[in-house]
Image 1 (cartoon, rainbow, N blue to C red):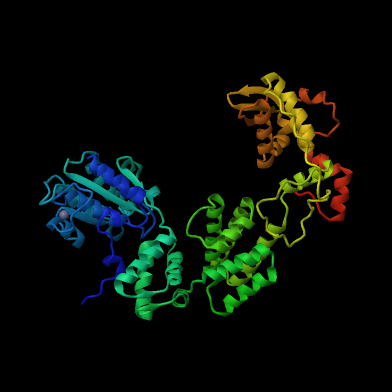
Image 2 (cartoon, rainbow, N blue to C red):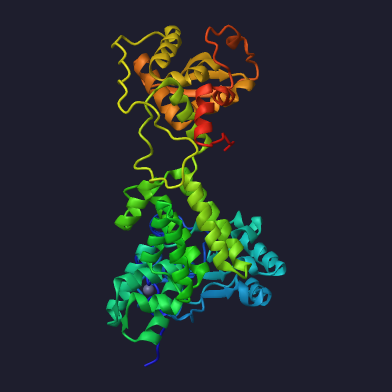
Length: 536
Ligand SMILES: [Zn+2]
């Protein structure tokens, strides 16, 4: 019996068995059902995600004896010839292998003849961006006025290299990287069919390593079977491909979030001594952080471990983004560096520092609160216990401040009375933002938005007000006092002078950062904690 690689043996036979591209197969099925077929399709996506498989299924769907049908029978001559690659009506051209001039010339000569058996003559051109420009031009002529019986299906990994004149004549579909969980499930399916004992964790390790490419995952499974026979455990995957155990990556991330630099570095050393590829570990760490990012965006997202969920809850979104950027930069530095470990260590320590630093935003808010004695707002959901001393500590106020007096319930106010009421409420409830609010000029209500204009010199006040916590506070306040939902729209207005500011009764300085820097209490705090106000 001749051995067939899994990617070939388990190639999807119909639209429904294409893994992870439902958004595309659904659209194609609809088009077939409604008989709204385009002349040319372009499948775009990274390698190994199903572009040519989908192209062949579409070809079968069109040329099956029962076709066009969303369910090609797979049994008729046409279906079988297409599957074997011997159909006279379906021609596959590989743009990468020979730049295609000859084949495209042939194509041009044959394109006007009717199909031999099927309903359509279908040209599948893979890596179409690699065609030489001569071939491209030849193709374009045909593409401009294709005979009714001709369909083109192009595939490319680099759509930006495809001539715009070709792009504009195609219906484009973007295939995406396949989620690791779907790849793992598919590998486990193959294992069951093949009577291979594939450990679930091993399947997940392969899936993570394949980074969204199903074909890569399948060929890794081929190799595993060649090396290990019919019993495959996670350790086999890790040692054969040099991947890192998910637990190791998660542990490393945990130590970084803890700010435990020596423990984090110990993991690096342990991995390095075990002969693991540190670049791979870095990639895995970035992928892990990306998972946390997905969880930040959608905490209910499936297929994540409990520890990943817990980690996502510990880190603020902007910090997470910073970390990913830092590690991605370190990853590219590591590529060419002779001492990868050093770069990795530096990146870990930097990350821990980043997590420990308060941002300018936090410092300003904290200082402003210090000044007015307002209680700090609840921190980000279970913020990471921060190991490195923060330049400025937040709670210097009494533990239990009296709650702000609730506003008496009153009828919704008219627009012109709204602003004074808002200012009054801000003074009562969140005094530290009052100078910023007053720096703006109330321009009125437009639809559901309260417009606040700022002279150019007050853009810092604008920025401060539009930070999420302040914006939410103000929008709640606006809605409460206006008696209907209102949003806040702040904009810099060139036409606004400082006139509104001149007559301020309060003697608060206008630039909040300067104000804070000069505040005696804050100077004291900076002195005590050896902190300084840095720009973000
Ligand atoms: Zn058929």
